[in-house]
Length: 208
Image (tube, rainbow, N blue to C red):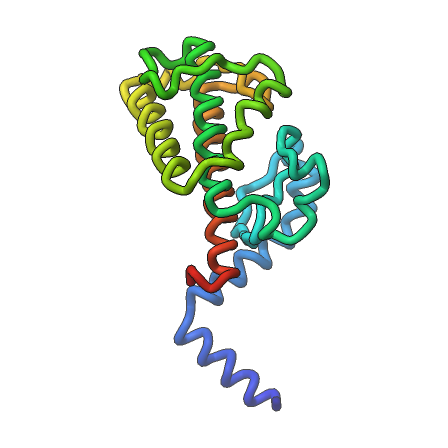
């Protein structure tokens, strides 16, 4: 491409897409000022200009309570990790577990329905045992359980003032967290496993 053609293409881009030019200049300026941030910002940095997310077909965390991490299966075929049904059931069981943690800490109040009244596990081994039925639930059982647990969490959290979200909870597998952080973990963990389930369906050509 000649210099004339490059200038013409650049001018066309600038006139038709000025926001791209501004985006480029901002990022070049940010890159140029990074040494100043390191030298004078006392360990603090400005917010990132953008974030790139690359979803995978499987969970890419390494949770200590996950038996697939423990036995190395997480590095195998994604279809051998957790089925779609197993992913949904896993969300339901772990959400139920963290709900029991919040109740035990007094961070949420109220009575659980009979189907959700279970002793709170007090060790990692007991918590792993609590999660075991996720491998045997039918699709209908997993979906019903997830709806019941999530509706219960929502009903107990909805009336709380913002200040109550800072109450400490001894969250299984995570240690002491605020109720706010536990709710974030519930959302993050659930999103991750639903993404894995969707990836399996897409890999089989069922979802698009």
